[in-house]
Length: 115
Length: 106
Image 1: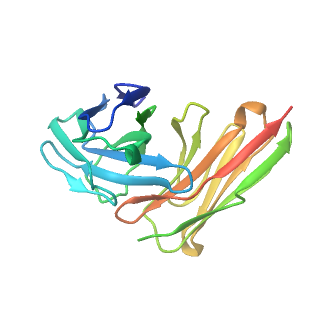
Image 2 (image 1 turned 30 degrees about the horizontal axis):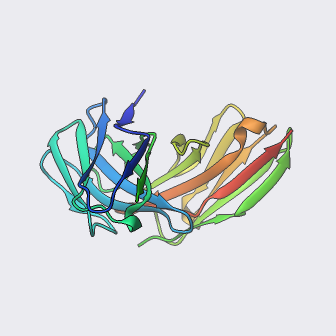
C-alpha cells in the first residue's frame, strides 16, 4: 500500500514565523503535490513537483515556497506565516510523470493555525 | 480549467439505506477519482475510475466519460460511511468538486 506521511497533524504558529510542513512518501512516486483545504473553497493546489529539484506553481502559490531535495520528500515552506494561511494542508503523491492522469494518494493532513 | 459539480450537497440516510452520489465534469478528463474524507480530515481513496464500472464491497462507481459524469453507489449504508465524499477529475491538474456531506443515522 502507498503510504504518505506528514510531519504534524496539528501545528500552531505565530504571525511572521517561518513554517515548514514536511511530506514523505514511500512508494518511489515521481509526482508530489501540496493542497490546502478551506471551508467553502474546497481543495486548491499550491505547488507540485514531478522530479527532484523541480517545482511548478499551482493555483495559489503566493506566500508559499517548496523544496524537493530527495524523491521521497516534499516540503512546503511558509516564509512568513500570516493568519490567512490558517488552513488544512494536504500532501499527495502519484506514480508517473503523466500530466494529471495518474491516481493520487493523500497524507493525513496538517491543521495549521497561525495566531 | 475543468469544472466539477457534485450532487447532492447534503444527504441524510438511515442505516441500511442505499444512495447515489453524482459528479458532473465540464470537459473530458483522463483521471477521475472518488474519495471519502474521514472525520480526521484524511482523504481515503475509494476509486480511480476514468471510465467504466468498479466495485469494492458495498461501494461501486461508474464513469460515463462520453457523457462527462460519474456515479458513486453506496449500498446498505452504515454509520461509519458518514463523512464527506469528493470526486476529482483532471485534464492537466486534479480539480475537486465541493463534496457531498453524508450523514448515516443509526
